Length: 470
Image (tube, rainbow, N blue to C red; front, top):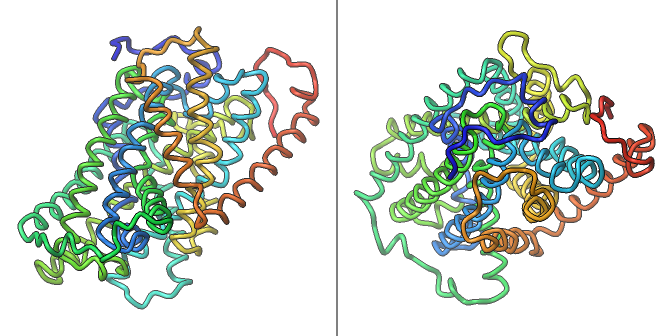
């Protein structure tokens, strides 16, 4: 990895980053990633993954998800180090496919997707937070769950409404809480580990049928949702110190560390609690601790998990707000989203808006939210971004790449196969269809906007910085 502090940036990235402060080092950058990865992940989805494959063989989903995530993380690492501005993939698409031609369309579609995906992601984490609170409030109604989840979204916006240096310190504190919970679970599980229980496979567990591969795809999809967050720091690229070094390191470190922790935690839990009970539990980690140490210890673990999940929502909202900010600052979205706090120098309208948009979705089920979110992101972001990497390497040699992917193009191709595999199953057809409808609507919105602004492709391209809004 190169030692240069900040690569030469395309003019628009440099200008849009001037209002933000580079206040996050490697520790804070890694913490921001890991908070989202752990906070929203295994505590609330272990049961869902076990149910998808019908047994402990679901650990294969964790393992396969880790491989795909590491490979995809290397795509983000190269792009993030080369173009460390606010907005992440929004910038990569624009620069890779031409800022005055196709890059306008692809980046617009990513922004269009973010309007839907960001609320889906935040609301899913908020619903997961409230579902775990069933441990304390077992009789919560569906309406109460939605109302509490919406309140969590607003609380997150309040916590984030402060300068980035303070946010970075809060991220490290929250990560310490997350580690306390995970190490308690792993340590207790290793002490009381029951090997026959952990590997109590059903008779047909490894029968290589269509059902096996479809189940593995569903388990891997949820696992990749849990690993999701390794890219969060790329949305904050304009606020990272020495981004050419710290962005790639934060991505690689967070994926490797979280993969080990996830696998260990999953195995020790089903080595203490029957996987059949874990598959239907809403608070499996709390029940695990309760079985070993009693109800008071379970209550303490639940508090830690709620704090960890809040940390995941915290960093997720932080990253998504920077996408809307970057587009608003450039004039490619409503310009009001480009506003920053006069003294704190952080996005204000974008931060509040993304939290408010998540609120109405908080009354949907967690499983539907997760599937809709992942399929939408696969079609609009994850797969196109792999092609963006190839495009930048071939057509944008003027952009320095201080970090280059190891063994290119193998990791990029593995990531591409992984995303296609988890999306192309019968269980996901409903969500693929919805994402394609969203894509068509996005294309229509783009061409309507182009006609109103007399811009590409309906008018000859003009090589200047747009100041228009949608």
